[in-house]
Image (cartoon, rainbow, N blue to C red; front, side):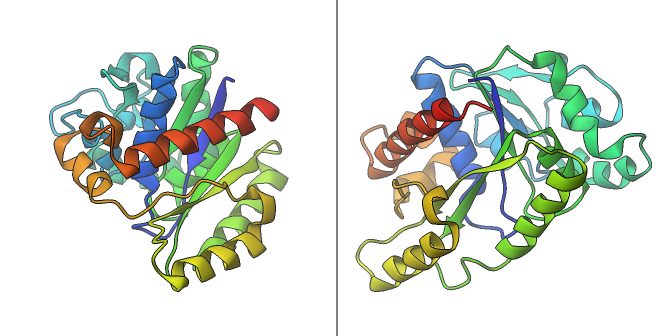
Length: 256
């Protein structure tokens, strides 16, 4: 595989970080080497992976701004490997503005790790700014979680527009990996209606597996665990395992 996938949506609360953590864990459980790169200053992917974000050094800030080799910042957990982040990363977006080759700092930092991981997942902040721009320039493809709610497509047009600009000017190979429906409630007609609208918009890019609303998915991050480690028999864990299988199948058809 050897693929770098940015998980992004400028709308917050869509299950972006949750998807990043659980897909990484599910990939590791299949015997693949997975790296989670936390590019969100909130550091939720870091803490949700069981890493103490307030104490860990070095972090992605050091990698991006101080030139620390990415390999030196990797934290190995029982779930997958993590390039951690914390609040210090919040100033990096401003500092990167004046950097040479500013949009490709992350790409260059990850380059020495090429071939060491089957999949690198980049958890992006919920905005289209310099950190997200770096993630999109470093990625082979983009995975977009979309919550099944009224404002589901809000902001998606801006993301697609940004991707087109990046594909044209900075990263000609980037593609949409897929669109994942999250927080799906099969009991309501509304979820089905939103899902139908998203499928009409993205067509065959939408994964057949959707992630249901599930209390175990919500509880797991507070314990610093992916849901399959927290409650492996839950509906949420099964959904992410099924999604992982579909993700692998699609990636193997289009490895780069």
